[in-house]
Image 1 (cartoon, rainbow, N blue to C red):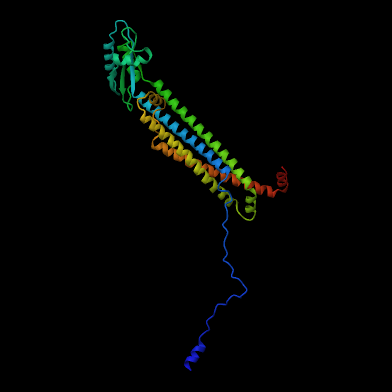
Image 2 (cartoon, one colour):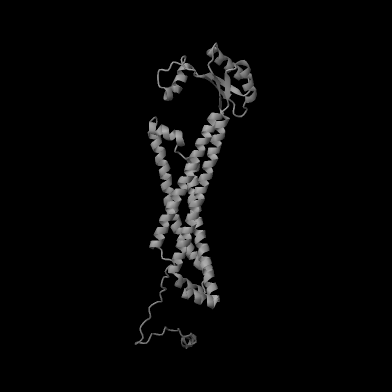
Amino acid sequence: MTEARSSLRRPATPQAKAPPAGEARRPPLRVRPTGPIVPPVNVSGQALMLVIAIMSFLACLTLGAVSMVRATAQSWQSEISREVTIQIRPDEGLDIDAALAEARRVALTFDGTVDGAIVDREATARLLEPWLGEGLDLDELPVPRLVVVTIDETNPPDFAAMRTALTEKIPQASLDDHRTWVDRLVAMARTTSLIGTGVLILVFSAMVLTVVFATRGTLSGNRHIVEVLHFVGAEAGFVANEFQKHFLRISLKGAGAGGLLAALCFAAAGWWQSRSLATPESDQATALFGTFTIGALGYVGIAFIMIVIALLTTLTARFTVMRTIYEIDLLRSDPARAEFSQNS
């Protein structure tokens, strides 16, 4: 009796209802993946990537060349400003050797002079060999003799007082402090920097215009998609982000390729220069451009140029998209302007 009551008190366990025999089981819903607004690979994207790579390569080459020229000019300026030259012209009745020794002694009496060296006959003849040939007899030619005085760059001597003292002791002596050459080197370095900056500005301007035209071309090809998305509720920022991502990938690839190629060019030039030391070609290139090594700061500058190009391309694309969507909204708000735009 007890077991019967407990069985009556138990709630009935619900059983799943079997589907009708004629009804088929429905498959689970699958979400179709959405495609990107901007095609990932197309002809215009590849052309833009090539243009950005060329612009990046030119910008990095310009930056490296300006860095090398500035470093060479600073090296020349340091070498020139470290020494002054006393020139003694030969004259009748003048003991040239005694005059050279006296000029050296007078120069070393001034504070700021470190050392003095008399350029002997053999060294003077070697200096004149490129112009007058070998086997020179200095006694037959009125060739001035030189005294090279090394000075302290941090505490240079009084050149005016030194020039006056030398003229009083040796009338045939003249002092050259190389100020003219230093001023020319400084002017050359500044001019080179200005030219390099101008080239970089032109490269960046051309790249911005190229990105603007490429973005507008991509928008014109996908304008109907952009309009539909925008008018069904997609904000301008969402559409701009899609284009921004697309152009960021393109700019990173293009700027990376151009910057890497420029870095390889500088590395190859430095390797060639190190392998061809003491050759006429290497000596001439070193005399004109200095060493082709740009150092760690140069490679950091190349990386910085690559980042700037990528950011500039991305921001230009975003601004262009936002401006285009604003124009679409303006046309839709003015029916007369929209009709004129469609007819034109």
